[in-house]
Length: 274
Image (cartoon, rainbow, N blue to C red):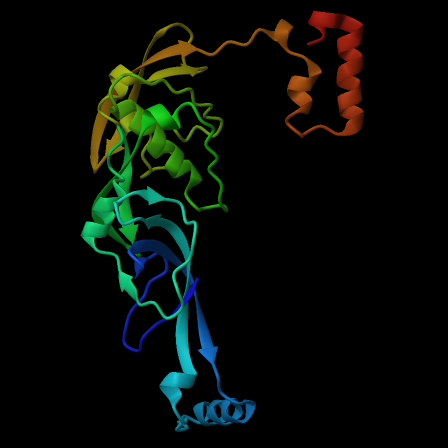
């Protein structure tokens, strides 16, 4: 969807807006902007030349022929009875676009679940609308979190894991923390699951940092203070006899000759190939 931005109106990337049409409310999220120009090549050349010299060219009907538009995607639609569903239609042309109000967010009923993951952001500003997932519907399904580097995938993963820990004890979650960023944070100043006050009761760690079942003692920085956590831990042990060459080759770090050598060793020595 694309809509025109009126002169003097500020619209931000990520902002939530609405369109009301025929008793139906469409909730949209702005994801980009595009300037529109109906100027002739001669007018563009004259305006560019004048701007380069610090001047300005008076353009005929400038507000009508030179303006900005916002690109938005429809997130959902709210029917007259308050039923919320995915978009199945689009609003008519020339329907006014308005800011999303608190009452509109309440109609979405985003905070009715038991896994609290945050609040709705309207542009760069957080709102008061809490977002809570229904664990009974989320847990049985597959969830894919994708994005470019730095988009916040790991952070969302930690938020989801923290939601499981803070929710009533009806769910369990297994994390493979290959980068060691979920337990204590990826770097100083970053928080991990061990920072949560409930970590000593709700977190269980399998790690090579301990040699027997015990409580792993951690000193963490939290809001400028040093806090101590004792996390229930169990040693990480691997049965070498259960490992096969495929467990190594699936990492993608071996060349074809190296993979062939691993399989030759396995066929020659069996379970004692390592």
